[in-house]
Length: 410
Image (cartoon, rainbow, N blue to C red):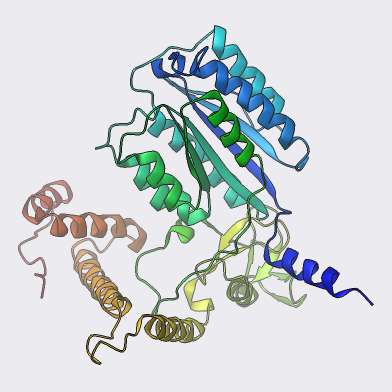
């Protein structure tokens, strides 16, 4: 029988899982500020040395981990075609920048480099299930405070697929800094480095494996009309050409019209089996799941998922929120938390979205729903920004339709 300390350690290891392999993309600001001598001999030389020490530590962490380098200077330079499994190669490339800098710019393209990093991680996220996706951004942070694209990408893309972004700001901080906001949104760390010692300490902290947290979601009471981010990323299962085939989950031979195949590994699944698999995986939205054979990100039609389970999940989440935010000093009306009003707003928005979609379907009966949905979102955006009239004028001219009977907001 195991000792009690051993049992506790095993339980702890199940909660804090550090075993998954990591893909780390390092974005280095190679603009003109990278060669400032406030951190002698210059910032790039110290970065190269710190990354080399980081590589020594990482080689002992997990041989499955992969690395990639993006240089953000006057242009965005992706250092190699694919990820590499030896971090020393990344360190060697940065060392070359010390004596042979790329084209430098006072405003390095950090935002564009971040976009390139997320593109690579999205491709991995769609293909591989058991990965921790990380991005390091290191530099002077010469990003215009008004340029919120960096924060928007962190919130709308990185956080939604679980990319962890750690940032290191070189030099003196001038608040508010976008590097800090990006790290907070993505559960990363934000560190300041005004000396060589600071930079070594920062990279030493980043060399540790990240704690893997299972994604959670708050279910909605009804399936939303608009596709979720995960649904957009996930691939559709393909119809079969054969008359009948065997489902690789339940092993029953069925007609082709109730079967689909994974576009990646070609395994055949029942639509109903795929729906149950999606419900059990709970990736973040009930119609999205990973193929049980190759882990490719897939989606199943919404009518094959039991949404009643998610209605129950919503009620449980709502009750927990109310109990956590209840205050004895408030009366009953004031105790209602914000989640109720947010839910009502979302339902009202979905109703408005469906109303506009039905109007468009009457005007453009030959267009499929998925082609009309982006137009609906543009109209909703115009309504929010009080620019509806010009939006409808453009729609009428470009699509040759009468917009005079456009449904007004109730």
